Length: 187
Image 1 (tube, rainbow, N blue to C red):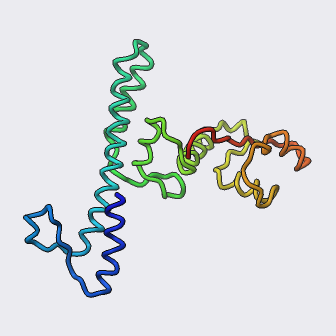
Image 2 (image 1 turned 120 degrees about the vertical axis):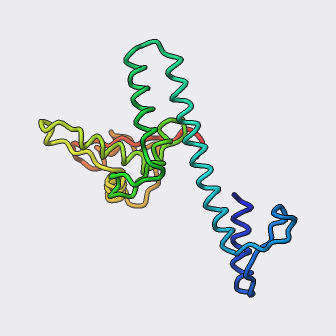
Image 3 (image 1 turned 30 degrees about the vertical axis):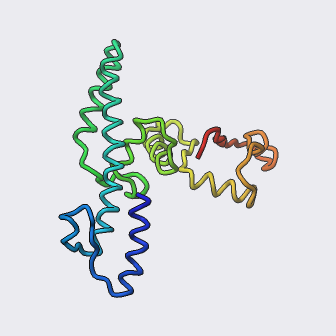
């Protein structure tokens, strides 16, 4: 991917210098010229390959769960998850985040990678939709709301260990709590 990015930068200047094609030494003994947009195509295909690899790895893990467990409930849930995920279209829009999410985001839930704000927001939106009507005084919000409140309360202070529920309660002089996740591993 880094190589493709360096090619893309070089292609921009080459285009300004009048170049109209690129030669790939691996293709047809470098006798054919490919249009400059080929580099953008390679970049897109590298991203698609990465997503497909992640999806395949996640689905493989899910299939393995069927052989590891004896519990009928787990087996049924796993089979249903596989069925649903197999029926999803590739990279289709989902109703989360005002339609900004897509089905490729679901593969992160089948791995141990860090979840992004987008993933957490998806979960929060889902929780909000599933909340019983009897909990009408409870509000479930996306991370953007939490970040705005944090910025209002603490200004430009950085995320740190002193941002605990007790410290926020003390500093705000209010009776509400926010829990901040502490990163303990690499980015």
